[in-house]
Structure formats: C-alpha cells, structure tokens
Image 1: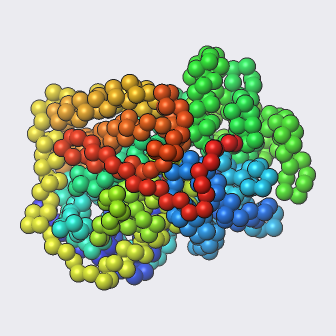
Image 2: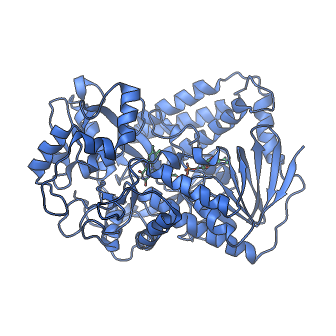
Image 3: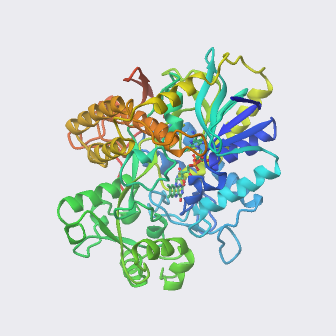
Length: 597
Ligand SMILES: Cc1cc2nc3c(=O)[nH]c(=O)nc-3n(C[C@H](O)[C@H](O)[C@H](O)COP(=O)(O)OP(=O)(O)OC[C@H]3O[C@@H](n4cnc5c(N)ncnc54)[C@H](O)[C@@H]3O)c2cc1C
C-alpha cells in the first residue's frame, strides 16, 4: 500500500547541505528530511581537511582574496557574483557553526585554527595562506554532528532510510516526491509545497574514487527524467591523493601541513609544474602533473602511483628550502607529535589499510575521482533554473554537491565544498520556506507513485540476461580510461557510445531478490541506472567541449579557449539522446587571465 504524507518543505538528503537547509527551513515551515542513509552516515561526515573562510585568525586574509582564488581556481568558469557572495558569507557562517557548538581546533589564544590548502593564497605575496578552519582531520564529521543536533532540537521530521525515486511535477511546479522505505519496500508519496535536493555526488561512475557507495547520482538522474537539465557535467574533479588502488582520500591538509609529493627518483616534481605554490597548486594542476610523471615512467617502481611524504624530516627539509615560516616569523618545523595531533585519522587510515605509518614511511597515492563540479543548475539562492535564460522552476531547490551554482566552475578549490554546503544550504532552506509560506499545495496526479512503480517493476520482471555487476564494471573502466584526467576526441566518443550501449543492456538486468524487506539488490540496480545516466551526460558534454579548462583536459585541444568556450554547458537527456546548449558565465570583477601557480 502506498502511504501518503504532507509537509510544506521536503528536503532530500541529510548531509551538510540538507541539514543546513532543514535547519533554516524548519524555522519558517513544517519541514521533513528524507535520506537513504541514516543522516550522520552521509558523505559529508568523511570530509577531512577543512572549511575555507578568510577569518584571518593567524595572518592577514581577506574575503576578496578568497573570491579571486576561487575564480582563478575555477579556471574562470565560476559565476563571479555567486563566488563573491559565498566568500563574503564564509566568515559569518563559520562563526555561526562555532556558536552552534562545533568543536574546531584552536590556536594557542583560543581562536579557530586555520591551515593551508591548495590554491588559497595571499594575493599580494602569492604564497599559500592559512585559510581552512578545521577540526583536526574530521571537519565534515563535526559539521554533520553539529547540524544534526540542531535539527533535532528544532524538531525537524526525519524519515531515515527512505530513498527518493521520483520528483512529482505538476504544470512545471515541483509538488512532491516518491520514496521507497528501505525496511519495508513500501512506496510513500510526499505532498509538498517545496522540494530541496541535497543528494551529493556521482563519483561511483569511476573505478578509483574517494566517494561513498551511496554516491550514485540519484539527484542527477531523477530531475533529468523530468526534463530538467544538468549544468557543466564534463567537469569532474580528480583529487591528487587517493590511497593507491583503493581511492580512499588522503586530505590535501597533509600537503597543507608541509607534506610533499615525490616521484620514483625521490624528486619533488611539483616545483617544475607550479614553481610558486608547488604542492599546493590547485587539484587539476597537481593531478595532471602526477599523470605526466607516471606516463614518463617516474611512478614509484614504474607503477601508477606516487609517494606523498609527510615524515617530519622530509617536511622540515622542504620547509627549509622553501623558507617557510610561521605567522610569528619563526622557522616552520614539525615533529612526529605535530603530525599525529593534526592528522590523526590519516595516520589511522594508512596504518589500517596499508600497514604504512606516515610519520615513518611515505604513502602510495594516485589521483582519485572526487567531486562533481556540475549538477542541477541553481541561482545563488538555491532556486533551480531550467534553461539558458535561467528561468526558475517554482518549488524546486537544490544545494550542495548535487547543485551547480556555479561557484566551482571547472575546478573546485579544497575546503570550498563544505563552505558551499552551509552557505547555499542555508539559502535554499530559507527560500524554500519563504516560497512555501506564500503558496498553496499543488495538485498531485491520481496515482503519483505510478512512474516509480513502473521503474521498479521493470527491474523485478526482467529475466536477468544481463548482470548489474558486469555493466557497472564496464562503465567504471571505460569512464576511467576515456573520461578521466586526460581526454581525447576518440576516447570520449568511444565512451559515449559505450554508455549508450550500457543503457540499452541495463534494460535487461534482473535481480535475485524479489522480496520487500531491505531489498538492496533492487535499489542498487535502480541506482546503477542513475549512474549510467550521469555517465552518458558527462561523456557527451566532455566530447562537445573542444578546449581544456580546469578538470577537463584534452590532449587534442590542450589550451583554454575563452573566445569560444567561456560558457556553461546545459544538457538534457531525452529519450536516450543528449541535447546540449550553453549559457554565459557571469563575470563581474575579474577578467579571465592565464592561470599561473
Ligand atoms: C573523502 C572526502 C573528503 C572530503 N573532504 C573535504 C574537505 O575537507 N573540505 C571540503 O570542503 N570538501 C570535502 N569533500 C567534499 C565534500 O565533503 C562533499 O562535497 C560534501 O560533503 C557533499 O555534501 P552534500 O550535503 O551535498 O551531500 P552528502 O553529505 O553526501 O549527503 C547526501 C545525502 O543525500 C542522501 N541521498 C542521496 N540520494 C538519495 C535519494 N535518492 N533519496 C534519499 N536520500 C538520498 C544521502 O542519504 C545523504 O544523506 C570531501 C569529500 C570526500 C568524498
């Protein structure tokens, strides 16, 4: 039996963005959060390194430096009005989190401590600046726990382990969602005035990824099935330091604390590729440098990984060479205790997964699929926009990694995602509640769960000529080889064709479990459909963009081409075909320049 519920605002996703939206929406409207995971298991909880804000607690810093660094990091594709808004809001929002009780690491004077991160600089000296506020290497965990407690206090309604499978649209307005309750397999229809999607990313499209199993692009596929476009899907970030083969993330905070990348000759190669900021260049630059080193045979033992070295003797050697100093002017030096105190989880992971002790041995690392710059197009207030003229879709909002505001453009800077979650989660929550207060409930179709039921029945009734695992493996391998750090016309065309073939074969995937209780077999298969849709659009948008910019690096078009390509991609998936169009980038203060690190 399909059950029915009514809430003025429904938020899909209980990560940092969803919970911040819920907190703000619940102050003005009856709010519910639906999450396929128990809230505190959301991927935000794995974020390690920090949240960017020009607090200037340890040295001079300014919101406009943060703005410029983000624009430059985005390879000029980010919308500058939204970036400026985010970097200005960063300072009050970090203090707001502090006042909610978030246990930040502290300076000796008791202020919020800050560390260096890739691409964040003092715009005058061009040197890395202490901008990332952190709670050891558990910053995301602390944000998630803090926001969850606040939501409980504010009596937000939680529907845990409810997986949303459809967005209900009436007359161009979002009026509800359909969810499956994992424990029972029952479908639930939620009638709402406003829906906020905060469902995270889709990194599971690739083979080696830092992303959680739940990162299956549900929030990309569901809206596309309702005719809503995705923005800038060709831009997917590969983080330079995933644990080799496993992909588990080693935070950039390791390099922020002075760690360096070394090749098989024991050379620090980043000074060749980014002479000024070296290991703290932006992620696209570092990942490409690692790839080129490996291609030239300088991977460790000729293999496809490099060393990340944070042993105190190495950090101190390079700190001396770089003449790195502390804010008080003294020489920057670290001890094993400093490393253990600032990066306890990293030390723990590498000891557990690799048997490597990072204060005594270098860590084997390779680029890992990490972050979706693209996603549901929104304004800086979380309102979803659905065409090249930025027409707002009433009642539909998005925030966090699933959204594309766009503040990250072609490449996100580290610490700017946690910031994006809280800044734009708050805006989306405020706007959703405001909208809900000024409108009536829309009309639900007679059988609102019909489309969802059809999708699930199709999987349940298949004879199973195809296996989900085979299709998933072929997708991941192809996307890693052909739509990874470096790309070519031929490779991307092949990948696009392959994804269309996999979409066809996916129609014949069956499941072994035909029961109702915790049928993860069924829901994982449904998620594979979302991953394939995300991959198709990614491959097509990448194929069409004939330039290199940020994370999209083409061997056949190695240069950025502002004359033709300084524009955002919008892509629609219609009857298995991808339609692509473009909209302008908002440029306010910073004319595009060559990016030098
Ligand atoms: C290992 C790692 C480390 C990182 N470190 C940093 C860092 O130090 N600094 C930084 O700025 N960024 C970091 N990032 C990036 C950042 O953490 C993420 O981009 C961000 O946490 C995403 O938050 P979110 O709220 O958008 O999504 P999530 O936190 O992933 O939440 C998504 C939510 O959506 C729900 N959901 C998804 N699909 C459905 C569905 N169909 N139905 C119902 N619910 C659904 C999930 O249950 C979950 O609650 C890191 C990312 C990773 C993977």
